[in-house]
Image 1: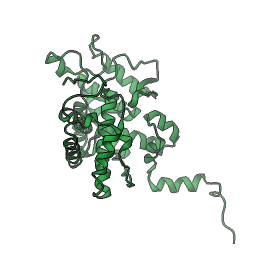
Image 2 (image 1 turned 135 degrees about the vertical axis):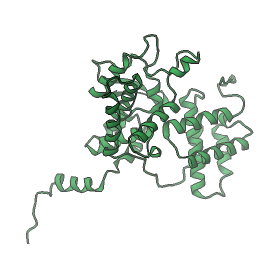
Image 3 (image 1 turned 60 degrees about the vertical axis):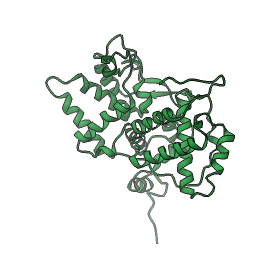
Image 4 (image 1 turned 180 degrees about the vertical axis):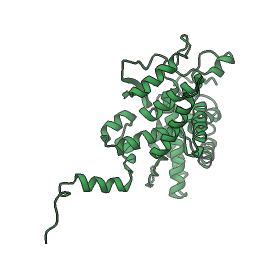
Length: 317
């Protein structure tokens, strides 16, 4: 879809196509539930109607007026509407469709933040066992090598789906244990790449056409004559869910974003520094990273019993 822009840089026209693109991203990258998707669609369409189809062009002043119209609603409803709009404007900024983000004007009702979906280590192991079974065949498919590289980078380095699909073909080198990514808000960060991931990508690299700009090109797009295009976030989402089903895991539990959550949770449980994890994930605010501190209570008890200065002292009567 081609967008037209006004001289001020804002998007002209209706909001509909942009809302569809945002919701597609929410499915592919976040793996949101159907009910959440329907609620977001309803909230965005209602807000767009109130602004005569110009939600994408809204200013902070416009959003303040919009929020005032929610004053009679329950706190949970206001929080959901604000979250939908905040995500929408963040998406527009990330995609370069807006140069600013007016969502600071939206209300932030006090809500208990839900814990992210995660996979335990046994479930992650089941995913890798399925991949290893594919690669153990006499003649593995090139797509099996691609799957291995995708999962190694999602779980092994915590990449966002949007970051993974656009990786250049030459972004990961055998002799360089890191890559520099440009994430949300155009911020660069250094991401370590494990030996396993570099080895997996190296094998897959042999199947990537030399003329391809991307590490994970879309074969379907090329076959349709659309040129050099990377796989979509939707296709990545489908690939990961197919692997989950093959591994005996409920596909509804697994998405690229869930593997990113698993990377963060398991690394933190293994003793990673919270600040280091924040840098690897590309979180602007450490409060976002702190949600991963929901490790097993058994690990917390073990930590206190083994590491606290009083752990080795015995009580005397």
